[in-house]
Amino acid sequence: MFNRDSIYSDAFQVGQRVRCSLPFCGFGIIVGIEGEQAPETCRTIAGIGVTGGSAHLSIVWETGSRSHVPETLTRASVQWEVLPEVVSAQEVTDALDLAEQTEREAAEAKTRADREFEAAKAKLVEDAAFSGLKRADQSEEYAPKVAAANLRKLLKKQWPDVKFSVRMERGVCSLRISWTDGPTQKDVEALADRFKRGNFDSMTDGYNYQRSPFVELFGGADYVSCRREMSDALITQAIEAVWQTYSGNVGDLEKPTPEGIAAGRFSFVEVPGIHEPVARLVRQTAASMTA
Image (tube, rainbow, N blue to C red; front, side):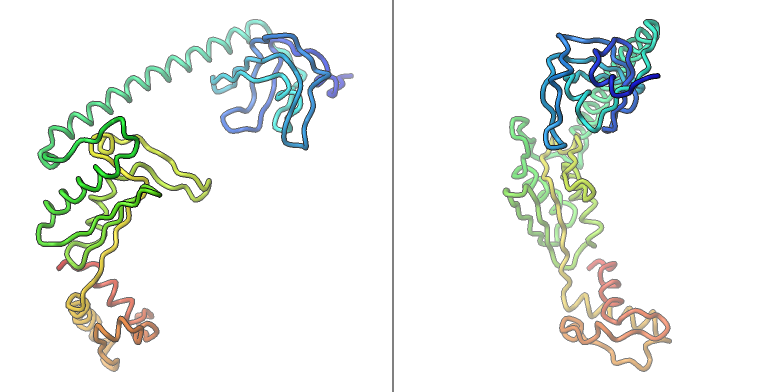
């Protein structure tokens, strides 16, 4: 009868199957062993670390990817399992062929992606919409100062009659854009978001960087935020629009003023039949209006 515990004390063999629960692993085959194995020295430390061992294992996973790991990790980590099966020499050869094919295809894909990336950069350089922008120094990792200057130019070119404030915060590598009336927040975000270097992932609590031809050329920041202030004049237009659109619903309601909206007097006054507060409808309408 097979004694599973002996797997962790006996010497590993080329062709032995293993399993790992870490991402991008799964089931694999040991295709090479370097150094002298010392299973009796392999230990788990406090349930999370490992120590001991002197050999290293080369493993090919079913996906075709490779790993080169210390013997003790395979024997003592709770994320690893050594299986009793030992595959044939032909299956080891097949696994190595799969790894080489996978690596070759990955290299070819990278070459294509690099070529497409450079072509996208060349197209941006030729685009008249971005003529006159300053180029980012490739030795500067973030280039937020260049991004801020270029963003100001593009905003002024797109909306020459609107005064924008573009502030740079070096500590968190962010750009903050604010303005009053003028274009909608959605329209400005469509332009400003081109300077983002990636996105924050709330699931992992980390930042995912994404290589961008635009950012490499014209600079970028980790975070880009837009905030549109709305004047009393725009709020007044929105109030009139709401009263016209929902004339059959607001007949018995007090018509608000911009001051009343700002003070919160209409935040809990619902429009009959709409079930939305007056203030929210007004602000939503104003947010969709250009001035």
